[in-house]
Amino acid sequence: IEVMVGEVVANSKRCAFLSTPSIFFSIKDRKLRDACTLFDLDEQWTDLPNYVIYDYREPDKIPEELCGTFDYCVIDPPFITHEVWAFYAVAAKKLLAKGGKILGTTIPENADFLREQLGMEPRPFQPSIPNLVYQYCSYSNYESEELSR
Image 1 (cartoon, helix red, strand yellow):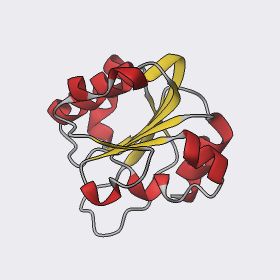
Image 2 (cartoon, rainbow, N blue to C red; image 1 turned 180 degrees about the horizontal axis):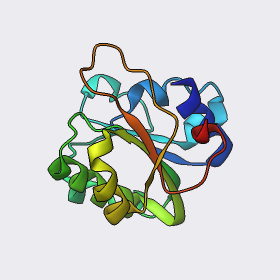
Image 3 (cartoon, one colour; image 1 turned 30 degrees about the vertical axis):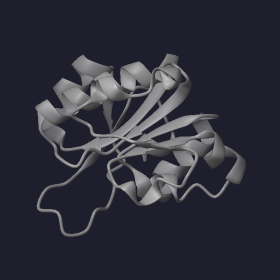
Image 4 (tube, rainbow, N blue to C red; image 1 turned 120 degrees about the horizontal axis):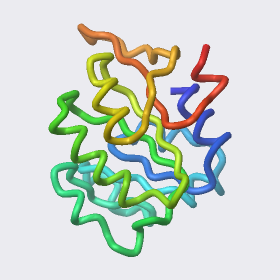
């Protein structure tokens, strides 16, 4: 989580966190976190002013006033299939301003799909996620020294 948080802090002024509450709540810079928005299905955060109820299967329900307003997007889908990633790709494209950066995690088998859909490339950094039977990789649509380690 620390590496991903570091990427947000280094590259963003306004980030859309798609299904990534652990990363959102790990942002210590209060000013930055207040400028960001958490998009998630878990309604326990409905009291937060920068929380949007988000069902990944319904990217068209993203509030219009948020479209094109983010410079960075972090994505960690609950499932690794192309079908699920396709919904997240739609959401990211809607939310990001021109030139926006994307950071995500998934399995190596999704590399071609992410390249085609979002211009993301696999990076050497592999997040440590306990109790998974497969290894996740990090992907981004920009070069990063930290993700290259």
